[in-house]
Length: 495
Image (tube, rainbow, N blue to C red; front, side, top):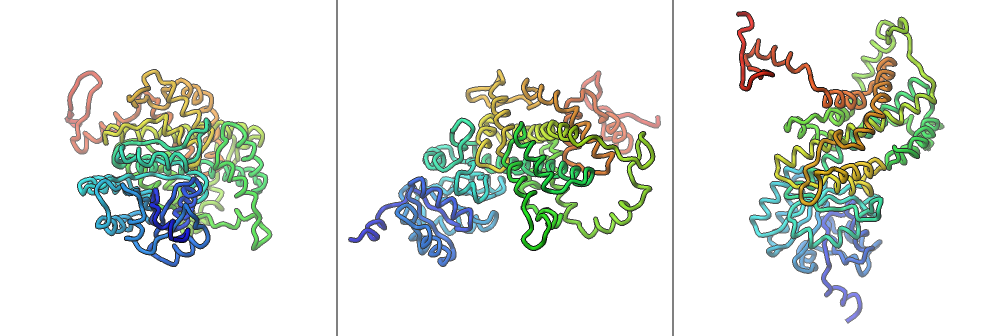
């Protein structure tokens, strides 16, 4: 028996279905860490091409689904990296007749957490095991180490733990950026919130970029140098690192900077919208993230924006007015602005994280999940798109809570924690000044201004909601509560 035939008799530790770029890179990552993996793609040509280029003793291809399933050691562990939605259900249905009891299906795609909850229950009833795992880091992360957020069957997690820990990125202390998140759809829920926070952070960065180019008339390379300076401090992050490259790159098709040739229409794949909708359904304020989604929606209305800009932007009647004088512009020195900007962005991002973590805490109660927020912060320190210095700060902040520890994962609101409270006290004035500065200069800052509004609202003892309740009771007899007595009350307002 030759070596090739001999290797065919060796069972693979794990299997993977779906050889788009993410699937290919993750398979290579697993094989590189010396876990034998079988791969399968609906298009045989894709599998053959991939194996021809990267195949070895740890990475083998299968010609059909039965051959793929038969090549795996039992209980079988099968990763799905296919398009979210119906394609996931279709692959699962095709797999079921070939599987044995206790085989484990692992959905590593960008699935909606409610789909994961449904699949978890359906597959569990049929005798199989299911894990829904969030994965962040993009194509590069899949190859070199992603952040992984597995949820679902805990016993099944223990059977893949060694693989996931080996292939994941490392946090600031060198530990794997992976942890068991919680039951059923908890993993995909946390990944959804991660993406929502990602939307918010990118929008805030874009608003800062907008001020620098419109108010200070700076070219992209100059803005890149300012972002480089910011990235060396408390804003140190992957997104700031790559922003310098994005702002500095020259266009190959013209003599301009590439960023200036990119159409100002931002796309989205839905996870930001999922996060905002979920927050609305749960009654949680997620305004900065929701506004970042709406900002992308507005960006998509290019024709309408161009038409309206001709009406308003070029008409002096609509230019900014202030106590500084008719149609005046409020300008501060660039050096002072950059100093304000660092604190303001930091404050805005803390506010965005506070909203995201508040949504997770609310879901924990409603879904009966036990989610460790300190661990969430830790596994986001490496591999994922929002990896940043700020996450190490949040990790330590959650660990510092006196009521936190053991299996009790109930944490206070982020703003209640001493370290965060001090950071907000130090940076809120700068965020307030930045928002005022941007508004006076006619810059749209939906995410940064709502980050400030969130802070002002959530830390306010009294809000004007009593006025709203009075109006609602007047026109609809919706009743109201009193500050001095319990129960629901209704008044005859014209009586």
